[in-house]
Amino acid sequence: MKVLCFQPHNDDCAIAVGGLMQKMAGRGWDLTYVYVTDGRHGSDSIPPDRLVEMRRKEAARERSLLGVGRFFELGLEDGSVERLSSVQRRWANEQMESVLAESRADLVLLPSRADMHPDHRATHDLAMAVAEKVRPRPLLVKYCVWLLPDFYRKPPDPADQTVMVGIDREMPGKMAAIRAHQSQVSRGGFDSMVQVLNAYLAYAFRAPAVIGSRYVEVIGLYRPHLHRRVANEVLRALEPCVDVTTMLHGRPSQDIRA
Image (cartoon, rainbow, N blue to C red; front, top):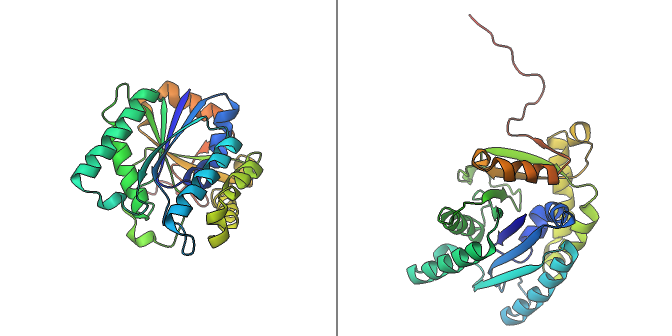
């Protein structure tokens, strides 16, 4: 299975789907990263050019830890993806389309449009447009990097199936991958935030009782009915996992007729 992961910033996949990436690597799947921005503005104290080089080295350590074999860098300025000129957008589109066609990916991971960071939204839109052009079309899996208090402003983000994936065995490796990005962890405690978030999601979806997991990642599958073979293979690789598209608190209501 060939997997291509579009990520706006160097640490986004480790944060959002570091557990999934380990499961896929453990199956011997071919994993490729596409870094959309250069990450130069991810610090208030480190000069931009120096930070670009630091983040490249941190990303290399993460890829080694998670088993990611190949990567591509688009090198767009951090924070600029939503306001690209028409020429820049066309160039980015061509680069992403070329990488996707060359990779012949069965599965493409991309950030959710509900992530309120403008680079995340814009990467989603670019990747969706590119994926619609290639044949055969890959299965699209959306990931959410952060759960932030912006609930009332989130734009719609279509996904047909929501899946909760247990990552207890992968959690130590995920934390190590996140901590490889020291320039980011040191400024925001992102490692602790992720650990709490993955635990919160587990208890919100009753994962300890349902799949015996204390830590989970949650992904959205886009049109899985068009990719049944790939979708079924992905779900088998991600076990323990369960469909949480419809989430209920308590018993389902009865059909009450007047």
